Length: 382
Image (cartoon, rainbow, N blue to C red):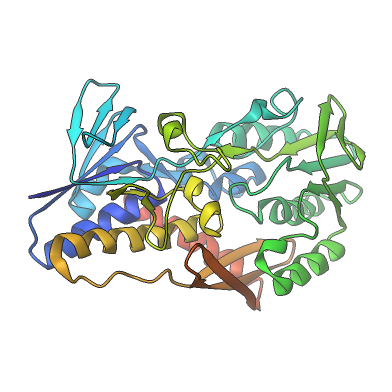
């Protein structure tokens, strides 16, 4: 029997585990797929923004990950990973269990490093956790000021379009409340909004932000945040409400796997996301995307999980086709419309080269995006 251990119950872990189990069953392979995750909840983080804006409730953002046992057939153990021993192929947990494996999928996500920049931990609100989203929701509802700043100290970060999408949605939020004089400013390291998605999407966001009166200031380097001001090397921007985007880094339990060139990220080799020197270990999280030229968002992680899962099946079965990294859709909405973009990828031998373009824009995109997220979670609700 081949033992596949999947660490983490987020997007990457769930996609990898269910694909491995489904294909192993179809091919009648003797494969044990076990997931170990610290949380009983499988969250859909994009819905946290909807919670903050009042268009979703907390209970709608998650589903019980344990239900994956009945829905998809793999084992799910709720426990926190405390040690990963690659040489002995063992994983230890807070509950005292020791797991052996033949193949390991690391889908442990990233940690938020709020204390990395002066004043970032002390001031402002965010919706990068459910608790944070609920706090931001209250702050927005009670807001009586004039100036909102959406501040990003560094990139890449989780969900690259979030600051721009949030800015557009805030304009709609306040207009629907009959408030038309709020100044909304995005301060971000990008030279232009969403520059990582190419010229089509840059034009989309610039046009929509102009229509929605959302200002953009490039952040050329953090200095500090005070109780009423964001100070960068090139600007001082006053605020009455600050919305902040967290820096991200490899989780502490994986710190020994960090890349020397940039310790925020994991060492990883493409095209199938293996950890160098350990061909049975796959690193599939936002911490492994930037070194390979990929975006730190859910759809890129979904694709990476499929590539990794098929690579494992190839080794177990001998000849199972390893998936190419497929084109990824980027879907966003704000103000009075939405967009769907597409990114195509080519493996260059060291990283993926991407080319992104706009497919179409429509107010219907909000409904499409919302339906996808809710349908995903509904599949885990019994």
